[in-house]
Length: 534
Image (cartoon, rainbow, N blue to C red; front, side):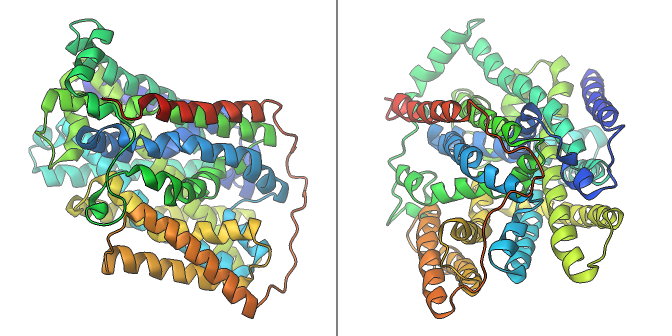
């Protein structure tokens, strides 16, 4: 009973506070619903970015990978800081100058309408087929394990998972449909604070338990038993035999991982939409760079617990890594904190789920519906279509989510492999739009198609002995080559120049470069300090 009370109090507070904050907002306008009225500030952007990114596929998936493979998977997090520096200093100023609402809008300005439409459709498919189902499933596992829903209701565990997926997905859809982006970012910010508090409490409580009331002694005990788990530099093969089963070979940090991080933090709609909704460039840069600092610190929540879990459980969960984090939580968390923790956990699920729904609705309403179905659609009509789109996509995601259980690899690895189908081809086209002025619209489309077919062929059909992140890097180079070659035969005919449309103030934050240098130094320090620990 205490658990449910804590859950209801925190969840109710988040909903009530967010609704109160939105009481005077005009959610019937295009910018009001899809971009939060272009009124977001740095702290709110950072809180929303953190929760949009960190969800149960991280808490469950990455801690599961850390439990089995150690801290080598930290690369997904700390290298994000470098991409966020690029987002703050290069991409955000240009996006805000152009007054973009979606990234596909840029592709229409730079290439043509068809390129925009293709990318828009790919984004929507990627949301529904990969991100949304995995987030819902990983969240359902955690809630089922911690609250023991199936035993509580006297039903089978699979039925408990289905029920949890439906309830969480339904609540997430309500937030996204009726509150728009601003509701999402307010709930994200509060849940983000809750996540930091609850997330860091797990390793602290565990180390307190291990050290008999002394956290430092607990850490020393864990380190002395499994020092190799703290090493962040992997010596796994990234090429040749065994490379396909490797988790994070060090070499991939310098190939495909760079492109993936750049895409996700500078071009992915559900992420960059927060910066597009900023009240000014200054606030957008603050939000992006604050997030970079949080990403360097977040392994304390999504990597360290997994390592500590190995101290407790040894190899007990090697074949069921998704159970590691919920099992650790049940072991160390006091009963009176359980409700609060699950509320925060659900907030993390809802954040990523809501953000993806809102972004997909934005892309469909503005990029497809208004362009092809009703060119004279009013703002009110676009908002209505956006809400309907969110509802429909939520139903699809809920229906797919339980089948993620049949995935042969870890949840986080599965998500990244599937993302490769979409992320790298789209990243190539967008980067070419900025940095390769000779690439034409036809070249971009051929390169996009080539990239999709290439990745699916070599990773899923022919299964060459190359780590999938290396395949991303190879794919990127080949895509660029194809686009440049095709553009020689079909040269660019349109002109494009970034101009300031005057939507928001684009004066840079005076500390942006200093903060960026700090993030680069901290990222290097992690690898220098934790590399090859023995």
